[in-house]
Length: 339
Figure 1 (cartoon, rainbow, N blue to C red):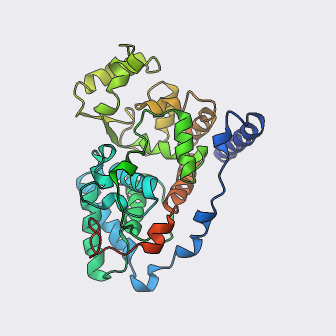
Figure 2: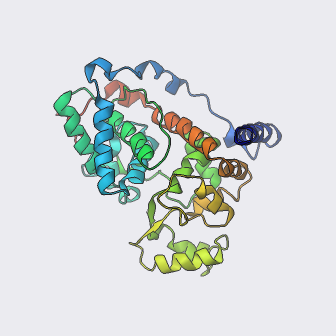
Figure 3: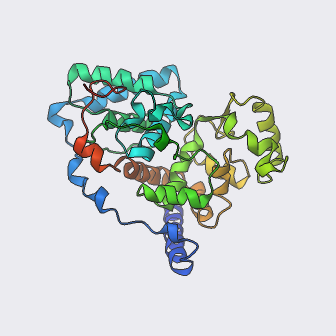
């Protein structure tokens, strides 16, 4: 029965995407998956066996380090996943988010709540001892995000390596990363610009099944939504009261999933049905005809969510940039370019 449900759910998603693209082309144009010759051309740059001889056992080093840090602080698992997304969402996956200098992506307002930098630096130091100037910070961050997902109870996926570390990092570019107040159309278009489609948007949003957000990101929904001096009407009344108690101060943290905040599961999608999406962009997924059927399908089957999450994370991590690949380097330290 479970296998049948999985197949039916998946077929529902495929049918929805196909029907939407043909019947409502003007409204759902962003659903079309763009052709990405620039990305496909990098297939030869990435390899599953790249470090087999040059740095044997590197994935084991990364996993053990991530496990060590997450054991001490479980909140670092979702933080590493988010750090990886922020990296790939700007200049593609080139570790530009890790550079720590004036005017870098890390210094942008949208990046101020990012965490996990010290974890990547620690991993890099350990990897450098074994294999000097061999493994890029971009590859380390990609693998660390995967291992953090696994340690949080999520799926495992294999990763091809070969990403180069970029030498450019600009705060003004980081400002383009979604902050939780965008419309669904804007989100779809942003994801599309990175080579990701609407299915990837809904699936990767499911990473909010674990982790926390600053109350600053949600307070406007609680007290003055769109200048009305009233709360967002799409929030469940009981959940609204809960959030008002939790978010008296903008600097406080609040769980993205109030029901099972430490478990990687489909509860995030169940919460959307109950009007318990924390960020506006979370709840909007269940209020838009382009994304609601997908969120529904994912909510019914944990294996479907896990499998598709792996697929979407691979797609995210394989988005590379011409400049970073051609002019990139293997940094000795992840927070500074080589000199």
